[in-house]
Amino acid sequence: MSNVVKFDSKAAQPAEPVPDFESLIRQFQPLTGSVLTPHLVDERPLYGQTLYIANCSLDTRFGTWRAYIFQDIIDKHYIIALAHGDIVNAKVLYTRLHSSCVTSETLRGCDCDCVQQLEGAFKVISEKGNGILFYLMQEGRGVGYVGKARDRMLVQASLDQLSTFQAYAAMGLKKDHRNYDNISQICYLLGIKASFVVLTNNPDKVDALKAQGLHVAGTEALEFEPSPFNLAYLTSKAASGHILKRPRESTFRRALPPEPVVPFKPHALPNARRFIYSASYFLPVKPVDNDILLTEEQFKDLFKKKSIERYMAGPKPLLLGYQLIRENRFFVRIDPENLTAFKRENPHDPIVDLLTTPYWFRVHVYYDVVTSQEFVVLTHGKPHIYDIPVVRLQSESLFNRFPLRSVDNRDKFKKSIKHIVTYGVGAVLLLYYDGRGAGFGAYATDLMMTETGQALSSDEAYRKLGVGYDSRDYDASMMLLKHHIPNEKIQMVMNSPASLVKKKEYASALNDHHIEVDKWIFLDEHALSD
Image (tube, rainbow, N blue to C red; front, side, top):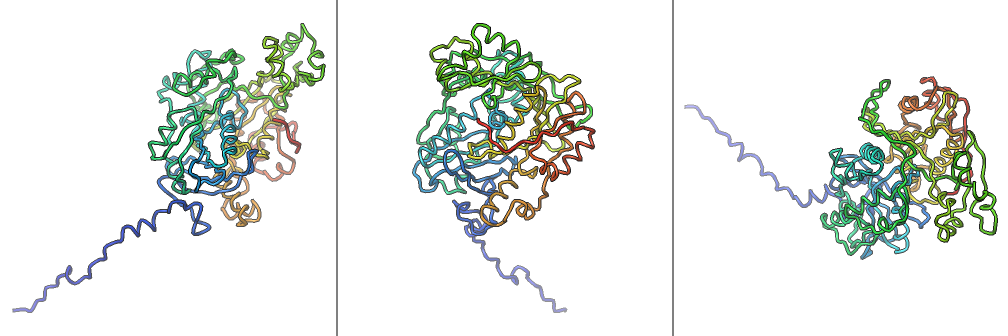
């Protein structure tokens, strides 16, 4: 009989300690207000799907604000929380949920009221002392610029007989695809416990805040006088439930595009199949320097009964001068303040129409299947074979959408628009990527590092980020550009000779795509008026 010892493995091993789940959660999750009181300089709190990226100060026309930049880790869009005053201890915060609008905030379009609402919210919050503005990258009520541009194309093709919401329905879209889940998560990360007074005309935004458990103490409307270009849009918003009175009271007539718009189905470009041509429509762009563009026929018709000199005379002249430009066109410079006062007493004088005479540009929107990004090209005029179009590659700057004291990027865009309109033919290709192509997250981190002394310059910050000097896709830009110029010769607008020297990839892309620069136009440093 053998002596066999049976070993009980369960009895021999020590019992596992019971996990302290509360302790695990405390270590895993950020505490409320953790963005404002990080334990480490490199800490980046994450709560829900909302990741904190960076923060920096913004010097605006409405005082100093602090921008907190977050990113949704699911769909990757940025959310900027712009804080003014004490957002932690205040009992009530004036707040706005504002969706991005590239056409009005970057491209100077005047076919909506978005930029007025944005700046109006800045003004109200600064006057109240404490508040926060949530800037959401949810273009076109969350459908993106491709969807929004196809809506505009369809509405313009219908001569405004279709509303925006009918166009959305025709495309198989809901009237609103926005998501506000990030707001409550940002409030947690910033330690905000106050009630909100919401600056909005849209009851759906109030319902969205309440659905997240946030307390709404009240609302205040942000409504502005309609224009001939946004009257139809605002009327459709009022019909859909927005609290708007002025569209019904407006005496403006709806302005139609300068020529018919023909809708088309999205299609790949034959010589660059990565790009799906998705939409094209007309954008009324706010004039630069109050210089109104008139054709020879418009000029003669406007001043056939009363000479232009009579409008330039007196202690409060309506017009400040005029200039003959290429192709027998005219710039007529108005005094907006005097002309607005004159309009109140003389509403039927044709001269008052100059207050609402835009520069007409055509918008072309492409979807890039390689990067999943949208590309936007603005074109002006109808090029002949002998024309040498004025071209600008304009890099986006999200912060320049806000009413900052210094808006270099916005000024560069205005100067470029002025050069194009003066010549009569040209194009602007918008490069969305902030931070010289590295993205807005890298740009905001650069600002934070230089502001806090973690880097002595942007070049050092980019080295620490592990990012090269210029990551923009100039090759893709040139492929698109060639679809909008009559030949391979252009006049190229650049910031300065020095910037051209530093952007070797830029010159290389021009050469690779056989685009000849007949003339370089370098932007000077003097500022333009709004």
